[in-house]
Amino acid sequence: MKTLPGDNPTPAQQLHAAITGYWRTQVIGTVARLGIADRLASGARGSDSLAAELNVHPEALFRLMRAGLAAGLFVAYPDRTFALTPMGEGLCANVPGSLRELAIIQSSPSHWLPWGHLTEAIRTGSSPMKAALGCDIWEHFARNPEEAEHFAQSMGNWSELVASEVARTVDFSRFARVADIGGSHGDLLAQVLRAHPACRGILFELPQVAESAKPVLASRGLTGRVDVVAGNFFEPGIPPAEAYLLKHILHDWEDDASTTLLRQLHAAAPARARLFVVELVIPDNRNPDTTHLMDLNMLVVANGRERTREEFHSLLTATSWKVERIHTTGSGTSIIEALKG
Picture 1: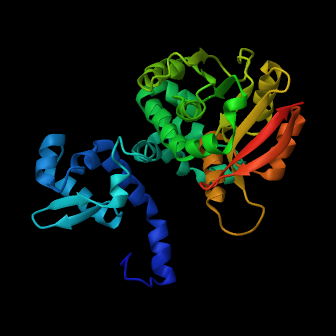
Picture 2: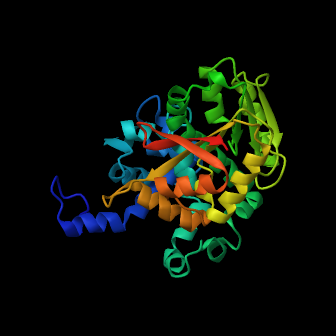
Picture 3: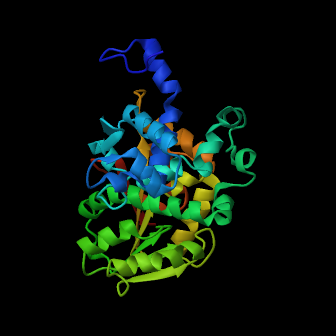
């Protein structure tokens, strides 16, 4: 069956393309993992010379890159020569808005294998991670530090897409200290501090992530403005600050765990501290929306969930945070601003 018959595919052809969508995921992930886009950044290259550089099978690489045409990554020229499309450029490592790390992690075992157990997740209402990998996602990352690093960097890629909007939408100049809780390498915090030079920052992360964040912050010239604190946000030890950032953290957890986290934050926060929850918000309608797919992804990989406005309001109110406003951004991410009650 032809997947791309023209401008007007039949319903059956559209369904076929959707069913085989995972082929494209692995093509894109493999191109990203091999660093092919970076090698094409300066212009078209032959697949045979690339294969020699990458120490991979030349015919297999040619077939991968030919499949990359269908995935929208390349254009082809004679003599097995390929160049990047604008979409393919997004897999280069150091371009603004790069999605290379996201492509790698989404095609890696931590995210890829659990989706093969989706039926089990729907039957039980729980993440199938242990069935797929023998442990939860955080234990898997502890056992596979290279994959964990790709995950941390992919979160940084995602942060770049929304961080400038957060820094522009919220006036952080009124806060002496801004603490990014579970902020990975501090990508969001770095944007906030650049936009508000009078603020100091705190990055609170698990020990292994906190250690790897230090050189990243140093490379951004922020060592003197950011205190890196190691700890677990489910336990006492969160540092005091006038403002807290929680970006894409609550969606990792069901309500019980999220409640524990929010109560720990509330206990650590000074009077009148503010909390900024940066999350997708499920729209209150029945129209198709990508947040519905993300919600299912959170069930599969982390036993977490996306939430509606009402669900966020209930969760925060139950932990003594008073929701004051919800800012919407052009990227689709929302910023829920709450005051310590």
